[in-house]
Image (cartoon, rainbow, N blue to C red):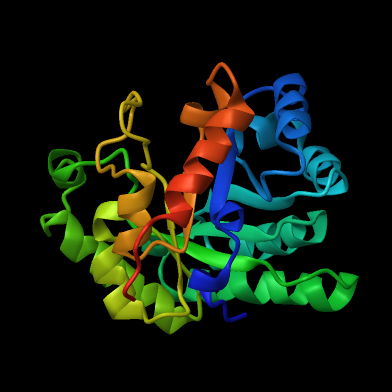
Amino acid sequence: MLEHFDRLDPAERIIVALDCDRARALDLADTLSGHARWLKIGMTLFYALGPSIVNELKSAGFKIFLDLKFHDIPHQVHGAARSAAQAGADMLTMHAVGGTKMMEEAIRGAEEAAGDFGCETPVMLAITVLTSMDQKALEATNVVLPVADQVRSLAKLAQNAGASGVVASPQEAKMLRELLGPDAYIVTPGVRPAGSAVGDQSRIATPAQAISNGASHLVIGRPITQADDPCRAFLSIVDEVAGASTDW
Protein backbone atom coordinates (compact mmCIF):
# COMPACT_ATOMS: atom_id res chain seq x y z
CA MET A 1 0.00 0.00 0.00
CA LEU A 2 1.62 3.25 -1.12
CA GLU A 3 0.47 6.57 0.26
CA HIS A 4 1.18 10.11 -0.90
CA PHE A 5 1.10 11.45 2.62
CA ASP A 6 1.23 15.13 1.72
CA ARG A 7 -2.08 14.69 -0.13
CA LEU A 8 -3.91 13.23 2.85
CA ASP A 9 -6.44 15.25 4.78
CA PRO A 10 -4.47 16.49 7.83
CA ALA A 11 -7.03 14.81 10.13
CA GLU A 12 -6.08 11.47 8.53
CA ARG A 13 -2.53 11.88 9.79
CA ILE A 14 -3.40 12.12 13.49
CA ILE A 15 -3.93 8.93 15.50
CA VAL A 16 -5.64 9.48 18.85
CA ALA A 17 -4.33 7.13 21.54
CA LEU A 18 -6.99 5.71 23.84
CA ASP A 19 -5.14 4.55 26.95
CA CYS A 20 -8.20 4.30 29.15
CA ASP A 21 -11.14 2.05 30.03
CA ARG A 22 -14.02 1.07 27.74
CA ALA A 23 -16.48 3.70 28.95
CA ARG A 24 -14.00 6.53 28.45
CA ALA A 25 -12.88 5.13 25.08
CA LEU A 26 -16.43 5.05 23.78
CA ASP A 27 -17.12 8.53 25.15
CA LEU A 28 -14.04 9.90 23.40
CA ALA A 29 -14.96 8.10 20.19
CA ASP A 30 -18.39 9.71 20.29
CA THR A 31 -16.87 13.13 20.97
CA LEU A 32 -14.35 12.82 18.14
CA SER A 33 -16.71 11.20 15.64
CA GLY A 34 -16.77 13.08 12.35
CA HIS A 35 -13.40 14.65 13.05
CA ALA A 36 -10.79 12.02 13.97
CA ARG A 37 -10.23 9.14 11.54
CA TRP A 38 -7.78 6.96 13.49
CA LEU A 39 -7.88 5.64 17.06
CA LYS A 40 -5.08 3.72 18.76
CA ILE A 41 -5.89 0.78 20.99
CA GLY A 42 -2.92 -0.17 23.14
CA MET A 43 -2.25 -2.95 25.59
CA THR A 44 -4.24 -1.40 28.45
CA LEU A 45 -7.52 -1.39 26.56
CA PHE A 46 -6.99 -4.53 24.50
CA TYR A 47 -5.88 -6.73 27.38
CA ALA A 48 -8.98 -5.68 29.32
CA LEU A 49 -11.51 -6.19 26.53
CA GLY A 50 -9.94 -8.18 23.70
CA PRO A 51 -11.07 -8.00 20.06
CA SER A 52 -14.53 -6.72 21.01
CA ILE A 53 -13.21 -3.18 21.50
CA VAL A 54 -11.71 -3.26 18.01
CA ASN A 55 -15.09 -4.28 16.62
CA GLU A 56 -16.95 -1.57 18.57
CA LEU A 57 -14.69 1.24 17.43
CA LYS A 58 -14.54 -0.03 13.85
CA SER A 59 -18.34 -0.11 13.82
CA ALA A 60 -18.30 3.52 14.90
CA GLY A 61 -16.47 4.36 11.68
CA PHE A 62 -12.85 4.65 12.83
CA LYS A 63 -9.67 3.10 11.52
CA ILE A 64 -7.87 1.18 14.24
CA PHE A 65 -4.18 1.21 15.08
CA LEU A 66 -3.81 -1.87 17.29
CA ASP A 67 -0.53 -1.23 19.05
CA LEU A 68 0.40 -4.54 20.71
CA LYS A 69 4.12 -4.49 19.85
CA PHE A 70 4.49 -8.19 18.99
CA HIS A 71 7.78 -9.66 20.19
CA ASP A 72 8.03 -13.44 20.49
CA ILE A 73 9.17 -16.44 18.50
CA PRO A 74 8.14 -16.26 14.82
CA HIS A 75 5.43 -18.93 15.16
CA GLN A 76 3.66 -17.06 17.98
CA VAL A 77 3.91 -13.70 16.23
CA HIS A 78 2.52 -15.19 13.03
CA GLY A 79 -0.59 -16.32 14.90
CA ALA A 80 -0.93 -13.08 16.82
CA ALA A 81 -0.78 -10.96 13.68
CA ARG A 82 -3.26 -13.22 11.93
CA SER A 83 -5.72 -12.92 14.83
CA ALA A 84 -5.28 -9.16 15.12
CA ALA A 85 -5.86 -8.66 11.42
CA GLN A 86 -8.94 -10.89 11.57
CA ALA A 87 -10.26 -8.72 14.42
CA GLY A 88 -10.23 -5.73 12.07
CA ALA A 89 -7.00 -3.87 12.88
CA ASP A 90 -5.92 -1.46 10.16
CA MET A 91 -2.41 -0.99 11.55
CA LEU A 92 -0.26 -3.31 13.69
CA THR A 93 3.11 -3.10 15.43
CA MET A 94 5.96 -5.50 16.09
CA HIS A 95 9.39 -4.97 17.67
CA ALA A 96 12.14 -4.82 15.06
CA VAL A 97 14.56 -6.29 17.62
CA GLY A 98 12.63 -9.54 17.22
CA GLY A 99 14.55 -9.98 13.98
CA THR A 100 13.91 -10.52 10.31
CA LYS A 101 12.22 -13.92 10.56
CA MET A 102 9.83 -12.74 13.25
CA MET A 103 8.84 -9.67 11.24
CA GLU A 104 8.38 -11.71 8.08
CA GLU A 105 6.10 -14.11 9.94
CA ALA A 106 4.04 -11.26 11.36
CA ILE A 107 3.53 -9.88 7.87
CA ARG A 108 2.69 -13.34 6.55
CA GLY A 109 0.13 -13.87 9.31
CA ALA A 110 -1.59 -10.58 8.55
CA GLU A 111 -1.64 -11.33 4.83
CA GLU A 112 -3.11 -14.77 5.49
CA ALA A 113 -5.93 -13.23 7.50
CA ALA A 114 -6.70 -10.84 4.65
CA GLY A 115 -6.88 -13.72 2.21
CA ASP A 116 -8.87 -16.06 4.45
CA PHE A 117 -11.33 -13.60 5.97
CA GLY A 118 -11.65 -10.91 3.31
CA CYS A 119 -10.27 -8.12 5.49
CA GLU A 120 -7.72 -5.54 4.41
CA THR A 121 -4.06 -6.32 5.06
CA PRO A 122 -3.03 -4.01 7.91
CA VAL A 123 -0.20 -1.54 7.71
CA MET A 124 2.66 -3.42 9.40
CA LEU A 125 4.96 -1.21 11.46
CA ALA A 126 8.21 -2.08 13.22
CA ILE A 127 9.01 -0.48 16.56
CA THR A 128 12.55 0.92 16.61
CA VAL A 129 13.48 2.56 19.95
CA LEU A 130 10.63 3.47 22.30
CA THR A 131 10.09 7.22 22.60
CA SER A 132 10.28 6.93 26.39
CA MET A 133 13.94 5.88 26.12
CA ASP A 134 16.89 8.25 26.05
CA GLN A 135 20.56 7.39 25.52
CA LYS A 136 21.09 6.41 29.15
CA ALA A 137 18.08 4.07 29.14
CA LEU A 138 19.23 2.46 25.88
CA GLU A 139 22.73 1.89 27.24
CA ALA A 140 21.25 0.21 30.32
CA THR A 141 20.07 -2.55 27.96
CA ASN A 142 23.68 -2.99 26.74
CA VAL A 143 23.00 -1.30 23.40
CA VAL A 144 26.00 0.98 23.02
CA LEU A 145 25.03 2.59 19.71
CA PRO A 146 23.73 6.16 19.81
CA VAL A 147 19.93 6.19 19.74
CA ALA A 148 19.78 7.50 16.16
CA ASP A 149 22.12 4.77 14.94
CA GLN A 150 20.10 2.06 16.66
CA VAL A 151 16.92 3.46 15.11
CA ARG A 152 18.55 3.53 11.67
CA SER A 153 19.79 -0.06 11.98
CA LEU A 154 16.42 -1.42 13.07
CA ALA A 155 14.54 0.58 10.43
CA LYS A 156 16.67 -0.87 7.66
CA LEU A 157 16.14 -4.37 9.06
CA ALA A 158 12.39 -3.76 9.05
CA GLN A 159 12.40 -2.44 5.49
CA ASN A 160 14.31 -5.50 4.30
CA ALA A 161 11.78 -7.75 6.07
CA GLY A 162 8.94 -6.12 4.11
CA ALA A 163 7.41 -3.90 6.80
CA SER A 164 5.22 -0.98 5.70
CA GLY A 165 7.25 1.38 7.85
CA VAL A 166 8.39 2.09 11.37
CA VAL A 167 7.51 3.68 14.67
CA ALA A 168 10.14 6.10 15.96
CA SER A 169 10.43 9.44 17.67
CA PRO A 170 9.89 12.60 15.62
CA GLN A 171 13.53 13.47 16.24
CA GLU A 172 14.56 10.59 13.95
CA ALA A 173 11.87 11.21 11.33
CA LYS A 174 14.04 13.23 8.94
CA MET A 175 16.78 10.61 8.93
CA LEU A 176 14.23 7.84 8.47
CA ARG A 177 12.47 9.61 5.60
CA GLU A 178 15.78 9.89 3.78
CA LEU A 179 16.59 6.25 4.54
CA LEU A 180 13.22 4.63 3.78
CA GLY A 181 11.90 6.84 0.98
CA PRO A 182 8.69 8.82 0.38
CA ASP A 183 6.20 5.96 0.63
CA ALA A 184 7.24 4.47 3.98
CA TYR A 185 4.98 4.93 6.97
CA ILE A 186 6.87 6.82 9.68
CA VAL A 187 4.57 6.93 12.69
CA THR A 188 5.71 9.11 15.56
CA PRO A 189 4.59 9.01 19.18
CA GLY A 190 6.24 11.54 21.46
CA VAL A 191 4.35 14.40 19.82
CA ARG A 192 3.36 17.22 22.15
CA PRO A 193 1.76 20.54 21.17
CA ALA A 194 3.68 23.53 22.53
CA GLY A 195 2.94 23.96 26.22
CA SER A 196 1.74 20.40 26.80
CA ALA A 197 3.12 18.24 29.58
CA VAL A 198 5.90 15.91 28.46
CA GLY A 199 4.70 13.01 30.64
CA ASP A 200 6.82 9.88 30.24
CA GLN A 201 8.18 10.80 26.80
CA SER A 202 11.85 11.64 26.25
CA ARG A 203 12.40 12.32 22.54
CA ILE A 204 9.61 14.70 21.59
CA ALA A 205 8.58 17.36 19.05
CA THR A 206 5.55 19.48 18.23
CA PRO A 207 3.08 18.27 15.58
CA ALA A 208 4.39 20.75 12.99
CA GLN A 209 8.00 19.76 13.69
CA ALA A 210 7.18 16.05 13.38
CA ILE A 211 5.42 16.51 10.03
CA SER A 212 8.18 18.78 8.71
CA ASN A 213 10.75 16.19 9.77
CA GLY A 214 9.08 13.51 7.68
CA ALA A 215 6.45 11.82 9.84
CA SER A 216 3.52 10.33 7.94
CA HIS A 217 1.30 9.97 11.03
CA LEU A 218 1.35 11.33 14.57
CA VAL A 219 0.24 9.40 17.65
CA ILE A 220 -1.16 11.81 20.23
CA GLY A 221 -2.94 10.75 23.40
CA ARG A 222 -3.11 12.81 26.57
CA PRO A 223 -2.92 16.30 24.97
CA ILE A 224 -6.24 15.37 23.29
CA THR A 225 -7.88 12.83 25.58
CA GLN A 226 -7.18 14.74 28.81
CA ALA A 227 -8.04 18.15 27.40
CA ASP A 228 -11.10 19.97 28.73
CA ASP A 229 -12.45 19.90 25.17
CA PRO A 230 -10.92 16.92 23.31
CA CYS A 231 -12.55 17.87 20.02
CA ARG A 232 -11.18 21.40 20.12
CA ALA A 233 -7.73 20.07 21.06
CA PHE A 234 -7.84 17.65 18.13
CA LEU A 235 -8.92 20.32 15.65
CA SER A 236 -6.19 22.66 16.88
CA ILE A 237 -3.61 19.98 16.08
CA VAL A 238 -5.22 19.42 12.67
CA ASP A 239 -4.71 23.13 11.93
CA GLU A 240 -1.08 22.89 13.00
CA VAL A 241 -0.50 19.84 10.78
CA ALA A 242 -2.19 21.58 7.85
CA GLY A 243 0.22 24.48 8.18
CA ALA A 244 3.36 22.41 8.54
CA SER A 245 5.90 22.68 5.76
CA THR A 246 7.11 19.52 4.02
CA ASP A 247 9.92 19.26 1.52
CA TRP A 248 10.21 15.51 1.40
